[in-house]
Image: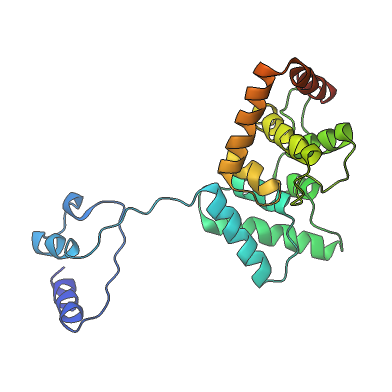
Length: 222
């Protein structure tokens, strides 16, 4: 600690930037001299939390672009939701997925990600996947695959998209950020608004409530 004290002073006096990391605040450090702890508190003390799911998804997208990997949004959302511990695990999952797809000359898909990274064959009691909800809602509304992710704002597409948000949230156990990411990279607040809009319309419009119930039954989720 004596040596570190003098090194710290030399760097500080020469105007160098010093960055220290710890799992405790300076005043909570034990077995560290008071003169060092006081110096650690001279600068900015920031609490760094693990990245949230939106940040993890963005990190994955940036990594994929940098390495020339074609990573579909639903796959990025799945990996970001599944790996919360650290960025190394997140990037490791992307590397394994990319390597397998390259060796087998196939595209990276959500089914492939589930197969390689977990969640193989789900049992009958498992929650729906967002992909299943997407396909079911698109089929019910007579839309084309990809319409819910597109920027189309026709009434029909908007209604279908909001209904998909509602079902994904309540029957696929997906978080707001993950749903937004899956549906074309929309902000989580848009998903919150969409789910609330469906709830409100269900209360006020019996025909719409019947529509929601029909779609839910068609997906075998209640």
